[in-house]
Length: 133
Image (cartoon, rainbow, N blue to C red):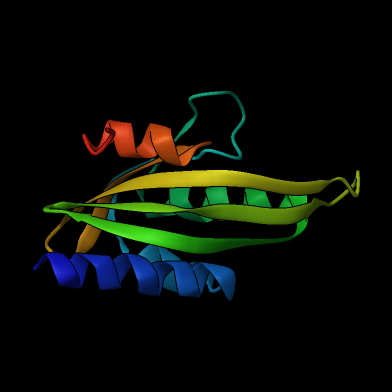
């Protein structure tokens, strides 16, 4: 099952990079809670449900003229998958380049993401999943 979870996250991220919003939302459970590392009305903003996932994507697209996430590692942690990578983009109005480390911990149940929490470092994501050294 856990290899399926890793593949689910990989497939979701590929759809994300293609900006297939409705396809991305399908990877998430209806009751999902998503805490973004790079966007939100305020620190700690929680996007709830598939509509929240779509709102999160819209906010990112409004803030950045382009943005991509490069997956460097995917860690299988049973019912969770930890993604470590980098996010690169350009601010839509400022033109400022974004290049930041990124980590996400995805909780998965019944083939859908039920919780996603973003971190601005690989170490923080790994620690949250109990994988820090």
